[in-house]
Image (cartoon, rainbow, N blue to C red):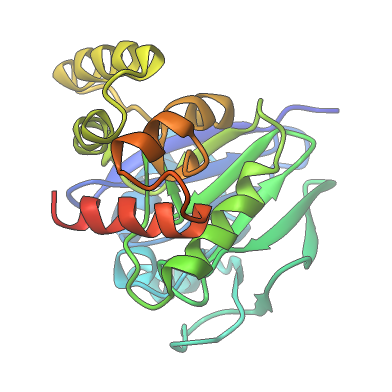
Length: 256
């Protein structure tokens, strides 16, 4: 299977956008458009012409530049089925188990309500790539602005079932803060402690910590480790459900 090219760029205070490019067909997609100017600069830097825009959810830091970028490029816009808030400019609305073709590659939609109720992830199985929006972060998960803890836990379990080698592009550079919180929940995790040191070095050098790998998240991200016996012991929740443990971890992070 041919390999696509990926170019991550920064915008706002901590957002990431990603360009996806097929050298053969010249098709190019942009994941989320919080800033049209930054997206256009990234396209010009790579000398790629935009054909597609993929929107994960309705929040302004993911959609503010959508109208401008669509007008300037004529790109076709894929986005979530309208649940909580309308998104102007979508050409097609997608939800769980929908799929489409980009550069002869299947793109599968995973609906992950929690952060928002319309949140979708774009998954390219042939490339082992997931664009998780604000659902799964490196060592974190999205705040629950619209969904419930149970809803988010169900959503994260969908992602946890993907192949462990899946590369995850999320939408924010929250990793260092998430790392320090993770240590407060799971202080004896040696893999986590080693990862925190690596993250500190990367951020000191202003190097992105994104993308990450699902296997690394399964080993170190407390939001995916509600079943872990040591975390349950640390939280005095030995006999609670995984969803209840997740809810406790989310509450603790909100107040960290």
